Image 1 (tube, rainbow, N blue to C red):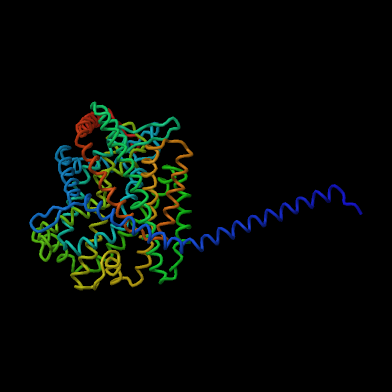
Image 2: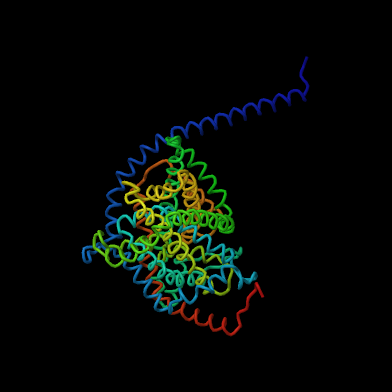
Length: 524
């Protein structure tokens, strides 16, 4: 019997469906095979890349972190550059870090938020995003390293550096909003690359402004892929594998792909999506970590007086520390500037997205960032370690970094490595999504704001998230790390030139605030 047209049509559809299924199956099989092979290939690739880039990383690191010996201690010039800027801005802005603290809290909680202002996120969301970019593994492990090398006295200088760094943040974040671009679609783009170019242009130094603005954009893009991305995803994988007892050995590619997918789901929505996540994650992880840390400190209550005394004694005697008190000071200052990034300029990119018509308001809000990151979280970590050392000298054995902090918690809570690992993963995750935005703004400054170019960057960023869990590109990360600190040179230079503009903005704003011209939009 001759088949009808209807039957023939069904057969054609069926054959097409079978071919499509085979094609999908083949594609999935190929993809799965590729994923299985990728780690093996990656292992060879990272060895090759490391051997090629190690000499460059070593040379570049020596240049950026060039050290000068002072009374037996080695001081990196880049750290001295950042400290000098922080001291100058604190003096020049008449201790705005003290005078502006209360108003910063009022602004962060939205008391003066005008919903009609230009911008994309609230003061609190901008602050949460910036804090998420600074609060990371360093707050847990970096402090332990600083206390190990610099002694308890390093904590005193760390707190002082955090206090001074608040003024630097004030200047750079005010400029970030003042010189930002407001795009036709309502989005904004700001940060050092914009205020360096426009600020120097205003002073007739157009070419110089273009050069250092472009240099900054390149530096922040490279930093976003390295220290703000691969290092974080790698540390997240290490923490997860540690608490899993090594069960994730060889599965870095899987963890990386999952992490990349989660990161992409957030960053694809831009700064508004990032801010919605950070405003929830940052308070949770900060409160979660601090509550347990304070409990540990209180359980060591008998050791608190001695631990606090060691901080002050060590700050001015530096017993047992290379370089004495100066050595303790250098280590403390170095840890602080590495942690809160004051002077690097990165945070001003996030703060630039705020909804406000008064640039200096975000300068005030940014004061809270080094306070939370360094003065609160880093100090609490130092006290956890310090009280544990007094209660049980040598409690950590040879452990340093995150392992040392973890053992201090374990003295009171044997199960604490698990929530600490969760906190470390959250720290790493929030740092990645914040730095994705920093890198995006560097990328879009160089290649334009088109949606296609932005999507291209986001795909590249997430590919590096996955790569960070699969390979150990130490030299490339060292180069990225060095670039992040190298860009503080043009940034601080620009801040010196543009500080008078910020001071004029601050004085005019305070005059109008005190006269009642600027009114509250909330709690009135």
